[in-house]
Amino acid sequence: DATSGSSSDCQPCPCPNTCSVVPRTREVGKRCELCDDGFFGDPLGQSGPVRTCRACKCSENIDPNAVGNCERETGECLKCIYNTDGFFCDRCRDGFYGNALAPAVGDKCKACSCSPLGTLGSQVSCSPVTGQCQCLSNVEERDCSACQPGFYNLQSGDGCDRCNCNPIGSTN
Amino acid sequence: PRPDVHPLPPGTHLLYAQSGRIEHVPLEGYEMKKDAGKAVLHLPEKVIIGVAYDCVEKMVYWTEITSPSISKASVQAGEPTAVITSDLDSPEGIAIDHLSRTMFWTDSVKDHIEVASLDGSQRRVIIDTDLVNPRAIVTDPPNGNLYWADWNREAPKIETSHMDGSNRRVLVKDDLSLPNGLTYDSQSSLLCWADAGTHKLECTHPSHGDRRKVIEGLQYPFGITSFGKNIYYTDWRRDAVVAVDRHAGKESDMYQPQKKTKIYGIATAYAQCPAGQNYCAVN
Image 1 (spheres, rainbow over the protein chains, first blue to last red):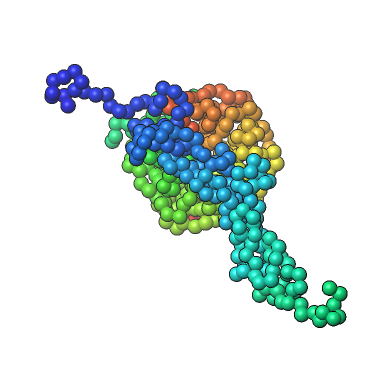
Image 2: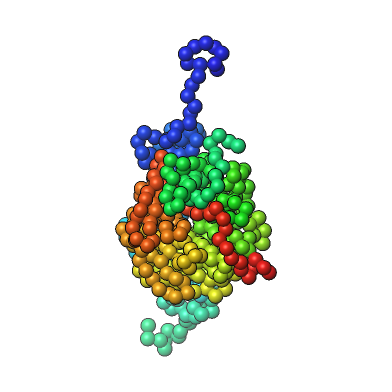
């Protein structure tokens, strides 16, 4: 307001040339209100407390050569790799099991590989931690690939049938 | 026109994307006129990845990943117009065939390559198998060829096909790591790529199958574009546009915009379209 007659009538435009004195703090936008790609936060506190821009937190399960790895305000991870999933790429995606946070890539998430013949409704997903598939009746093993002892006919696709061996003529 | 947006003066320019802006730096001969670099477009909410130039209508096209879309604007300070806004996840590379008036793009989440007319109509998926991290894509309009790179860490490769996706072949697969940038120069028939893993800039004549290293020791190349004997690449480490003299095999110049954030795609805005016509343009 240039008409009120004080020395502070005219304020400088809130339009800096570069967003921060310290380079690499990663704010962008007209008023430095956004975080750059690969970073997240709310540097001006437009929707809550001020959160300075930080690198995407995705449990080391993103690729630094990718773009758009996380949502720039919430930090939700958008490009999880190694078959991980979740807000922080911190669990295995559907159809995989194991420890998404394991340091070695080979120890992270493995395919459920449920046996189609022994699994309920031919499901492809399993318990995300143990990897146990949902077996049909009288079927066992993590991947539902075998009949329980005393049962046979996994090939039926309806679970296993009791052997019904005559106890007198059988060896055990 | 907005005060922070500048129409492109006549001449040849480099157009590059830097977090929510498309900027240009004029070329005087091969030299970047660094103090004349300015914003062509300001889209602060957006993260712009790929940039392509249509020399016929003098329009810039770009891909954007925050609300995934493909848009265009006249470089004479035109308003942005959305061209494609649906069924995109992570559109990255974009290329234009100025002769047949079509555009091609890669999507690194859908893992496919699409084509559409420059107005967004007649959209079609042309490649949807064996892609993991497709990014760079370029056209060779006079010969009707398409080239793209996939930086899949397990099996990176550079491929080619006709513009309808037929006759697909792998051109390069050995000694690649992160081939982020790809450019085709019609005059020399050279396809060149910048690799952020091997840190090399290499070229091939696709029809001969030769392979030649131009320079090694690049820092972190993302996009590249060619103009005559020069290749210009964007560098994620130095937040810069770097000029490489292809004949001398060395970096000849570097432009660091005032803004210190990653620079993504880059394209050459030619003063005039290169000569030539192709099958689609006359059919």
